[in-house]
Amino acid sequence: MGNEVKQQILTAIQGFEAIVDGHEHLGPERDRLAMTPDVCFLFSHYLTGTLHAAGFETGDGKVLSRFEVRQFLCDTSRPVEVRFAVLERFLPAVRETAYAEAMWRSLRAVYGFEDITSDNFMDITQSMRAANQPGLYDDILVNRCKIKYSLTQCGHADLDKPFLVPLLNFALLQDFPGGRADVDRRAEGLGMTVHTLGDYVDYCRAQLTHWRDQQRVVGMKTRSQPEQALPTDDEAAGLFARLMSHGRLAWPDSMALACYLRERVIALCGELDLTVAVHAGVWDDFRQLDPRHNIPIILRYPDTRFDIYHMGMPWVRDTLFLAGNWPNVYVNWCWTHIVSYYMTQSGMLEYVDFVPADKINAFGGDYSAPCVEKVYGHLSMAQENVATILARLVKDRRVTLERAVELAHLWFYDNAMRLYRLDRL
Image (tube, rainbow, N blue to C red; front, top):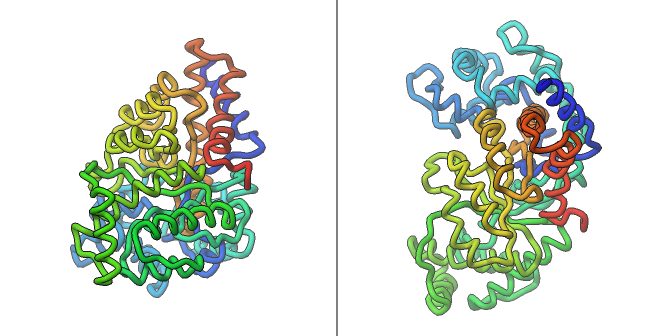
């Protein structure tokens, strides 16, 4: 009975006319078309971290960092035969991970191969290269996944597909890696002149408005970070004046000014009806990304909407209490299904217990252009996870079958449409 109900729900979910993909790092399709993809690309973005953890090295005994693994796998100046020979040694160590599961599902559905071996890796490579032509994004994201909008963060808003909707990073406003030259260049782009911190905050308001109205930007992304004492308005004005007069600020003054501007941008997002997306939890030294760090800003800015990413893994339970406690906080299960399929599944049941149903977004692939194919596999895993926990609720007589399908539609489409004001695009 349970499996039958799960299949009914899964079939209904797979039959939805459209979904919203809540988070990607996809650049324009032209970025992918400029590449010469091969089988090693399927292991980039996240699987590189697992390969690093497995001790990935190229023969000299030096373990590569996750960034170096990605560089190696996507370095097409090296023959694919050479790169795959190294990768093949580590494939058994990562084969059963959730990251790999998304890849296997995509490999089967998109290219028709069941496995990757020394006998067929060149056949897979040839299939990938044959498919790497205009319309690839449409085929995978629209035709196969039925994605109406894909919210993507690639560092700019110059996207070439109407279903790609940009989010931009707070760093574009709060950080000054080029010093004063960044201030002057940014202001010049809007025909403004900036001398003081007040001028720069005015620029931030104007730039956010321009991005929203002219470039379809629906939100800004930041990350969890430990709470620290902010400079006062006068202190921040002094720091900005030094930036403008000296050309640069040294740490820790540069960090203090960035934290001050982060808060101003959060407030402006509330004023301008833009959503603040927050990376929380898993990645590198994840202690710094604890989702609980967000509680003070949630309380300080009740008029700003916060979309907390990734279940805050491993703080899955802590994150659900953020959305269950405050009306301006939402949760986004982007990335989670491929971080840990089963941790996500078990956490989802607890989210249903405590988080209002209209505050959950079920899916975001979180991939970049070299492995856009894997969005399909990740979506398949997300659909199964949602069907599994909803079937449990039906079995426990918490919801009817009809209500279960309604909940799935909220999580895969309606909630994200409302949260990000996608109806105004």
